[in-house]
Amino acid sequence: MEIDYPFHFNNRGHTAQTTWEDHVRDLIEQVLFTSSGERVNRPDFGSGLLGMVFELNSPDLAATLQFGMQAALLRWLKDLIELKALEVTSEEATLRVVVEYVVLRTGQAHTERFERSAA
Image (cartoon, rainbow, N blue to C red; front, top):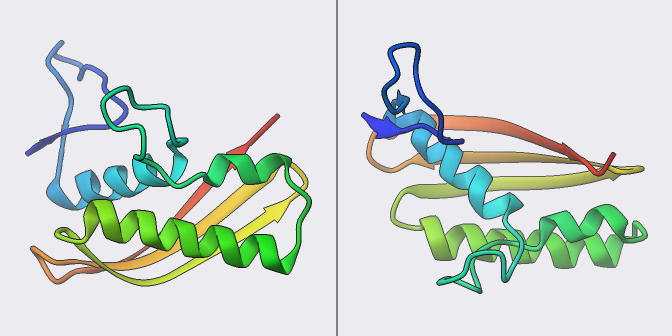
């Protein structure tokens, strides 16, 4: 069992735990939604995704951001996942990210959807 993210306590007052599969999903979420410079000892950790909320939508921006997110996932999680596909859409102040990946330890394929809003 792994520590659940975000950190919280279970109904018995212990640190909440989760499965390996959910832990890997949590790690993907952390890489995608952590801004560069946010982590003190890892200033290059993250993908820059949250900055897209305030940018004008354009095919060039989307391609650049998608490339950066793929690079971040491969850099930080290459030992845990095989990235199959990644898609980002932005509507007004809402970001939607769909990530398709295979967990290397189990061989399980997953499709996860993440959403964040600036409002």
